Image 1 (spheres, rainbow, N blue to C red):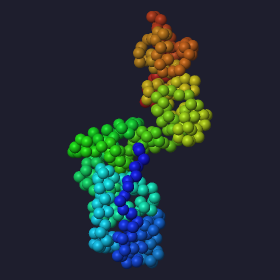
Image 2: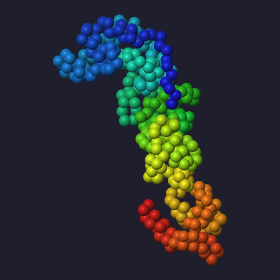
Image 3: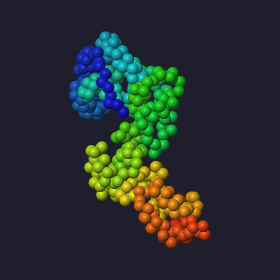
Image 4: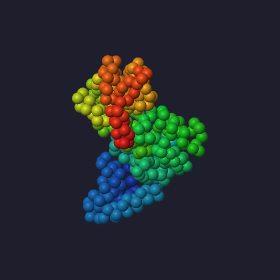
Length: 360
């Protein structure tokens, strides 16, 4: 996701807030300044303000709500109509519904100024807040109809992304737009669609910028194994564990010791040891197991095979010398030749397959 582009305001938020507050009683003004962080970035709780005045938190809430209503009925509010209209236009430009954090980050880096913008959103009649829930982040809307369509599209999107799936940002945007029904083609451009994705808590991007389900280990990266998966996914072909460790350190600035990386890859069934210290991803079609297991599975699937056919097939899945394959083929507990000179499974291999089948 691109960094939020800064929006230039035609008014000074702090000056505007001061004018909106000027007609209030001292206590009412103090409550709003404290609750919305207008004097200092840290916002105070209802309880802490109540302790200062020796009143209940519910009484503080009543004072806050009454003060906001008083502002909306004041001359100062009427004088600020153009400011509220400017903020409304900004939200319209971002698609009509926007994540609160994304919008505030787009306006300014300073937390205090962000608090003043947030105060205007709360005071303004034209802005509707959707509270944070399990699926969506806190967000503001000025277009109710489009807002509902966006929420519906995101709900559909959540159900069409699997836990293992990773998509580029472009792919995720297209997937979302395909589910945005009832909106004229071209009305929502890619930039707006990207910020719509930010409304969702169920999808997110990983450190490499690929999108998937937030709870997926491919997105919420928690350790060496997950970082290794992203590195190998990006590389697109098998890598030595030392190379994986070096790439984790250089790409994510996370210290990854080669031996630790080797041990983590062995434990995770997303990875397959395909050669001496070389690992590939299981999703690329590599079979798990040692060489004799690969040969066993190939014969089980394809039937009797010649030595040449086995070597060719195994070399597509393992980085080995031919002699290593031949040594494994000589294991009489696993393999034997039939009357045609082709290799078939011996009783030992059949027993292993039967045990493997029972585990499934």
